[in-house]
Length: 82
Image (cartoon, rainbow, N blue to C red; front, side, top):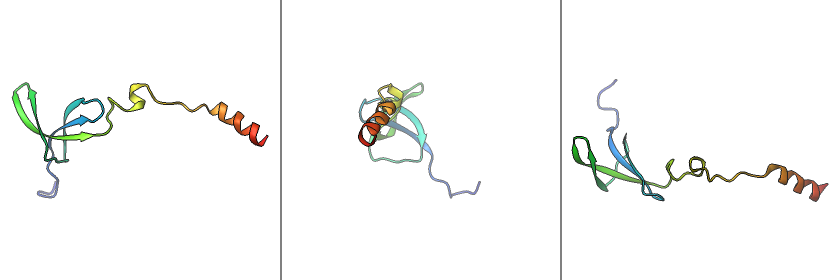
């Protein structure tokens, strides 16, 4: 790889805005907000990025996704334009 062309890839804590769930991962994203994270080698300070949706609050993953009644829509269409 060429030196000095890649962005800084570092540990970051992401927080779900709806549920408050937090997880530590690596990212190139940056933030002015920080958080203390206790790990196996002590407590460290990481950038905190608050996101709107994670798998903890997304309707598909939580099982609250709405399903369209396609058969009902077809019948509605036939009644209107029969």
